[in-house]
Image (tube, rainbow, N blue to C red; front, side, top):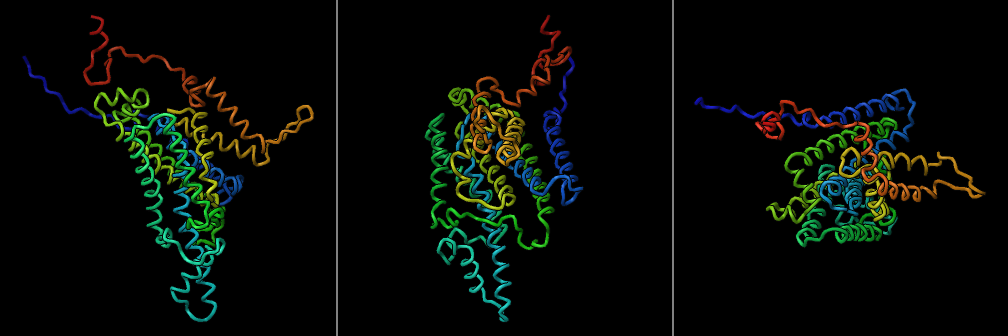
Length: 419
């Protein structure tokens, strides 16, 4: 009997196994290129600078929605605190932007006196400019590394990541699940928001950090060009985040996550470290949210504690639900759809309605419409907008004639099964 020798098993490349990644990246690239060509900074000026910023911020919201879908749609953790991680990333980069911009102003002002300023004079001047609004004149300890861009960029990742790691470890090891875990995440967000509202928090209390749209050293560069730069950064972050998320939810790791979502007790019985899986996904999603916030707020120009309020995280869950949780592209679609629609309704572009003598102003009624949309999607379209793609695709059963019936190499073939 001839000896059979099996050759090396070749793994199909990731992008071939998941062509949706290439489709998503291609659409994102074409969108970014189109906006760039139509922008005022690098193109023909059809799209205004303010709308380019809106599109860039929308891509950042898509990234944080993607992070939310990782923990909720694939792992079954309804987190109502992810906008806290989003805000932490914004505060981390905002501290450097405000410090460096103020430093340049103070140095230029002191240099006009004729004598070169001392480091103590510069530091005192910066502190007075930044914290004078809250009645302080010294840097709090939290600003110890605000002068260093690399350290603040590291804080964009480490601050939300460490908070998620500590919070997740305490919650998951206690096996808190379901609505109780959602309440805990919401309480975490509320506590952080209330702390930041205090003037002695070190982050200017209710005033927040402002002037973030002015990049230090690039004051002569127009906002039309800067807005396109941030659009590119937002698109790059979203593209890389989508690839990372797709890789995480694919293969065995993704199957375990879905198993935890559907029946956590059974997955634990099979010997998988459920808490470790949940903690890893929760931490990674928090880091993605922090990166999204770090790119979002320089485009918004200001960040204050109201951005971290629990209602913001609830809105995030609504976006993912409308887009279709458990589908990465659904989360992106939901965030983009609701964000742009919100801009249209609340920006005064949607015409008011007169019904039986009552005037409906969408600026006031938009949240009601959003809530009704969430209820309608939950009742009548639980798969969300992303589910429409499944219907339009008109999926049919694959043609397996002469092919393996199973995923493994050498699985039972159809003609053998009929024998």
